[in-house]
Length: 594
Ligand SMILES: [Zn+2]
Image (cartoon, rainbow, N blue to C red; front, side, top):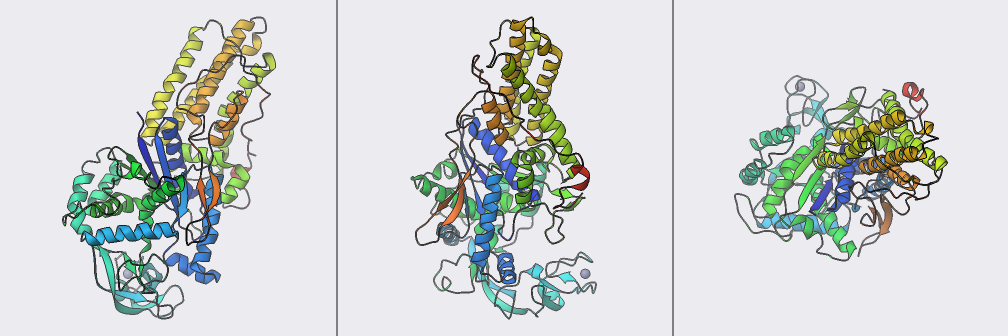
């Protein structure tokens, strides 16, 4: 049965290039899931974009001597190219600085405001005297009032662990330029989270199939929900859409509030670009549609509590009641799929400590599928996981190249050399039939794992099938069957059928290699479609690049497809390049060693 599946992928922040830890959290898992769902016949809408507002962008822009917009343009371009290179099959990867996004954010704000879930009140906040901008808590440093430690941050003291308010710090100073912050009373808007806590709790109690850690974490947060500020004294962000506020140069919607609305605004933009402006509703207001949100674990709170709270308020479904807002009654997340951290020597990747491997550098040297494979098979799906070059070399050489690449190469080579085409089988032995049966059965097993976002088990099962095929060929020894051509051709046909099946099972993980195997088996046309970068325009705004693609046109379908005897085969080229063993000890020279 066809379902409408929304894949909502966390928005990478555009203050620099992304590293392989980032794409192991939000990128590769969401793409594997979407590719599988499309192959299984569902209508998938996969959306995201770069998150471009907020203080860190302004601060970075000041330090590079450019405007915030110029900085966002630069890193939006870098990130779009990296994600395209990795083959992430977004239906639309856009950005938060579009006119469309501003409109959708303001409409969401107004719907929440009209229903009474957004209110304003004065708040003491720290301002930079030289720029007039809000100084976020973590950008203020000073002496801890509890322990006297001089490097305490405005949000907490790392020495004694106490939570702090910046106004409590003695001798406070800006981490950006050393100046003394000014504490002023300023009117801000707040999201009234306590007013939806009851409905949130009821909804969370229906999410019984979520991962237990996500449920427990979310339930704990519900016990102590407070109104949360959604505006700031800043000049970089979405203006507040109310009279008396709209034109204030130093009042903007807070970056986290606008970024989560991006899932909806990107869907709306995708629909408009598709020629049917209402098409987004199929994934958002049809109660039968499903939505899956992918992110790293540090973002769970926004997807399991805050975004659902905003949706409930918009829908008029909290304690204050209300009417559904301008977008109608919007669906809450079906599933929140969070990853743990990819680390190096046990520590998080860190740009400031140069403990980092950028996606662009990695792709240039090793190509996309080796990284996709590593993340799927050895990534941080259930626990923090260390990246080491040694492990990367081992996985690439012994699993990708030896187990899978070699199976494809030797079975296609033998058929090409002896027959020149896919051979015609005769009577099957029990061993032939058993191998073909397990290969067929793997579609249900691997498919049900992918549907539940169990990527590691899923790829393990697909690779186990490749291992069985290798054992089968070694036992059947087709190269010794020169005098029994019928038997030899049956063995080769059986092996090639399993190669075709395993290739389909691996397509969501290794879409670039899958295209090559499709061609090695004599296929033509697009087996697994790749995203492309297009430059688009919108009324009243500058042109910008987006990622999109024609995935409906691809041939890949989640089923065993009988290979056609007689289809001509060419001499195959190796699927994967083996890496030099020394790379495991030295790394590639441009990256840290773990
Ligand atoms: Zn302290």
